[in-house]
Amino acid sequence: MKPSPFLYRAPTTLKLALDDLAECAEEGGKVLAGGQSLIPMLNYRLVRPPVLVDIGNVAELSERTVNDQSFSLGATTTTGWIARSPAVRDAWPLLSAAASWVGHVQIRSRGTIGGSVVHADPSAEIAAAMVLADARITLRSVRGGRVENAGDFFIGYLSTAIEEDEILTRLDFEVPNAGGRWGFEEFAPRHGDFAEAGAALTLPAEGAQERGRAVAFGVADRPFRLPSLETLLTASTERVARGVFDEAVGNDFDAIGTVTSEKRAMGGHMVARALGAAGVVVD
Image (cartoon, rainbow, N blue to C red; front, top):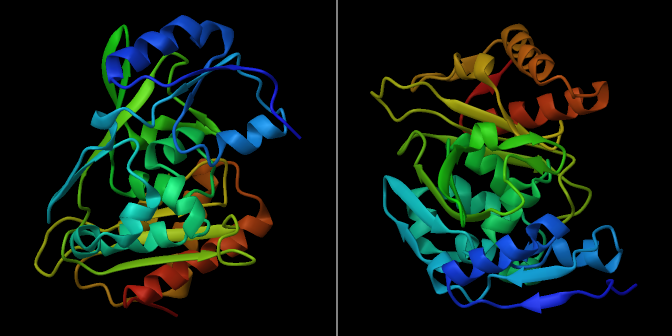
């Protein structure tokens, strides 16, 4: 199929992009970044925006800074760059691993992290990583700017806190549990398919007083943290009793409220595998 007719705008500055979106937002205008989610929806006429505002030529949205402690990533940073970057792999290898699971190389070369986060597919690896990292999401419009925490940004299936006239411009976060152990696992019918279930987690570095972090994705209507499990994850954690694990993960799945019995079993298995990848035995 072909998309319904639309006007196409390609601003070269953020100000122009915000102005263009402000003019068409009320009529259903959309922002186009990498297009790996929006273009298929256009072709199937699941969305019919009268105007597309292409932000791919806005240079400031591709700016990025990565160091051992923190990341600042422009919205049009591609998933492929994250998967390939030695700086990302050295600073936070979990994010590099997560990005390598996104689609295939052609999709990663075009798809952007901002687009993935705004699309908010509950199976999206980048969205899950942002929730794990407590990322700060910068949103801009002609009315001004604001920052949302990733944990509050995702509110349901393909649904976020972004307003129709806003553009996601940056993602900023500190590396969670820097220097500690980590695990990332997901199940998909084939590599590159959408994840049926997945989990990512980090444990503190030796001697650190903070607790671990864990997130599940693909099992509910949005990615979500596992606070009951996180209370068990310390720098010295090497083993978690099966009964304690099942109770903690069960409580966290119950709290989100949209996990089916099939997804509960699959998601629990992915969390256990992620723990195993981090060197924690569940028995």
